[in-house]
Structures are given as structure tokens and as C-alpha cells.
Length: 248
Length: 315
Image 1 (cartoon, one colour):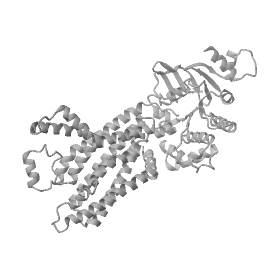
Image 2 (cartoon, one colour; image 1 turned 90 degrees about the horizontal axis):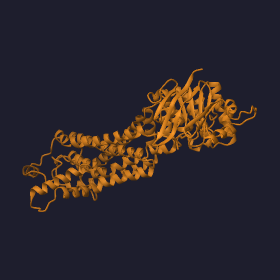
Image 3 (cartoon, rainbow over the protein chains, first blue to last red; image 1 turned 45 degrees about the horizontal axis):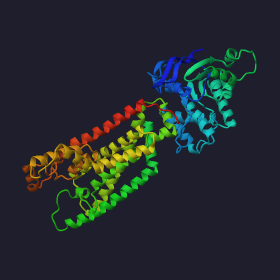
């Protein structure tokens, strides 16, 4: 399995504050990797650096074989990014919003139309695609955000707090959608969250990030063995996480 | 970039703000033309038709101002209104982080927005000048000659460059300031300063650099006038007014003040009431146009620098 993301000592400092400190990790093709950590741990900053939206202070990164600092456009062509507060043009319909993004990706109108259609069906918004995006609920906007990523036909997606602010039903739909991206379309997923029980349900591997440093990576089982060490079958990510948190 | 251009253009033309602005400006322009046309007709009754009557539609002031003055004053508003929230609105609604995570160069965002604005401005100004000309034809009843058309065309080009400068400036502010209200205020403040207070400022500067203690001392008066004139050229409003007045009024052969003219120049002004040929008029205004373009370029340069280095986060 090839690595789609590979970083080495990636750092971002704002003045004397270290937002991301010496981040070294890998994400393999086809897996769902969860970035866990409290607010302000540097999760979003890491995603921005991987996408070439902000320049790292030090270290190296490779995303799909490209350096996001040197070749940001090649990275952006194949990587979809869903920000924490996803924005749409409220005076355009959902469909028009997606078509605009398709145009920005250099698709021909015909190709754009088919891809937009497919993406809308996939996220279950086809019926409401001619409503103004401004009239969408938070859950619908979030799914529209996923549809927008699909229009690109990405190899890898970054999801920043994808389930934040959704109701339980919305959370379930979103999680199912993320799993199907990975299973059915073979898209690798890097998601950041602080909602541990949700991440636990869908992630293959997780990385725990606290105060800019990645303190642990591995499958949830591995981490439990390392930290809890009592051979239980039932453990929650919460417990593991709190151990790490208390240590730092 | 073309995709952005198309979307922005559609946004402009469907926005209420554009509609209001366009109605307002058209209304004022038409009323002024009508008044100017009527008074011109009255004045010219019974005397031999002077050359370039048609252009006088734009330069004669009716009641308050001439059409050329009106555009010099209100033109900036068009540019400012279209650009002051160009980038920061997208930043605030979170669409900017979406834009920059697409495989496009960041400058395409600015370029697309600017070009869409320029296209809107061009449409607006062309239709306005055509309407004014139509109404002018009706009220004055004089058909413009070829040279007059040429002058009007140059006037149009200069006007577009002028309004585009203000558009560029307001886009720059929308990049620099996160808050929409701040960028609108800053742009309006600069507009008012350049329109009204530049004259005072230039005078103040001239008073300190080249004080006049004796009005009879020609050297001093000239130096004062030169410094004041030079300083006020910093203002694009002044640049534009001087450039267009020479273009629209062929009898003006120079953009200089009366004080600065030599004896022979004054003599020729009063004795030889011959218009300057079109190409010579152009020669006079080229430096002004160049300066306007240079100012726009500076806005752009700063915009690029600021925007490329900004970190764009959602929220």
C-alpha cells in the first residue's frame, strides 16, 4: 500500500507560538485516518499546510507524490478540502454552486453537468438541487460540501470537523457517506475531529494531536494496548485520549 | 479565470446595487443633458454655429455641474460600490477558502473579479454616453462630426480607466480589511479626500514649500502655483479632470493654470481661437492617462502581494 500523505518534521510557527510542531506521519491509500485533538491543537493548520494554503515554517510534506509548497495546483487538482465552516454562494442554487466549482476545475459544461448530477444523487440532495444554497440546513450544506468534493473526482479528501453541529441523524448520514467514499470509490480520507466516539466508528487509524504535537498514531486497538494495557475488549477512544491528555 | 469572470459578471448585472446605481446615474445624466441642451439651444440662437457644439453638451455646466464634472465626481462611486466587498465578503461567508482550494492560481481570483468589474463599468459608461448623445441630438439638433466622435471615444476610454482605478483600489481595500464596513469606509474616505480636500492639501503644501509674501512677485506666485498644481496631481480626480477637459474642449491647448502660462501662450489663447487638432490634444493628455494606469497598476501590485501571502481559513 502506497502512502498518499507523507510528512517529515512539518512545522508551523506563528511568532513564538508553535501551532504545529514537528509533525511526522503517513496516511496510506484507501484508509480513513482521523486527526484527533482538542480545539486549537493544530489540526486545521496541518490540513492547510498539506493543501498548500499556508506555507510551513519547516519540514517537508508529500501529498500524492507532490510537494504542496512547490506544486500546489497539482495537489489541489486531486485533493478535495471540506473546511469546518463550509461556504456557498447563498444566492445561487445548490446545483449552480457545484457547477461553478466544476468550472473552476476546468471541466467542460457537459462533463460538469454529468458529474454534478452524479454527486447530487450520491449525497441524496438531487431532489432539492434547485433550491438556493442559502435555504439549506446545516446538515444539507455539509452534504452539499461533500458533493462539491466529488465533482472533482478526488483521490484524497480532507474533512475538517465534518460532523460538527449536526443532529444525530445528520451525523449518521455523514459518517455513512464518508465510509462509502472510502469503500466504494477508493478515496483516501483524512479527517479531523474532536468528537471521539464518531471517529472511533469509522477510522482505520487515528493520530492524537495535542498542542501542536502528534503524540501517538496507530489503530485504536494499538493505542489501547499501549496506554490502557489491560487486555479489555471494550474500550473507548475517550479513555485512551484522556490518558494522553493527562500526560501532556 | 474565465469561469470566475463569468460568474462575477452575472453577479454584477443581477445585483440590486448595480441597478440602483445605474438608475441614479442615468437619471442625473439625462436631467443634466436636458438642461444643458436647452440652455445651449437658447444661447446659440441667432449666432453662427461655433465648432464642436456637440462636445459642449459635456463641458457646459447647467445649474450645478457639467456632465464631465459629474462623471469625475460620481464615477469613483461606481468603482467603489462594485469592489469594496469583493474579497472580504467571500472571506466572511467561507467561499474564499473554497475558491483557493481549487486548482486555480490565486491571482485569477483578483483578475477575474477586476475584469468583470471593468466589463460592467464599460457597459455602463457606453450606454450612458449613448443615451446622453441621443438626448443631446434631440434637444440641440446638431449632429456631431467625425472628430467629435473621436474625442468622445477617447473620453470614454479615459473614463473607463478612471473608474477602473477606483475599482482596483476598492478591491485592494477588500483584501486588506477583513471587515466589509471598514473597507467601504476607507474607500469612501479616500474618495472624498481626493475629490475635495486635495486642493486644500496642495495649497497647504505649496504655502510651506513656496510661500508667497508679495502677490506682485511673479516668481513666487509661479513657484507657488507650480507646487500646488504638482501636488494635486497625486489625486486621480485631478488627473482625470485635467485630461478630460483638454479632450472635450479643443480650445484648451494646455492643462496649465492661467498663472503659469507665458505671455505668448496667453496671447495665442485670446487671439487665435483655433481648436487644437485631435492628435495634439491626445499628446497633451497622454501623460495623464499614463499616470492613471500607473496608479491602477500600483493598486494591483499591492493587491497581489497582500493576497498571495494571506492565510485563508474558514470562519
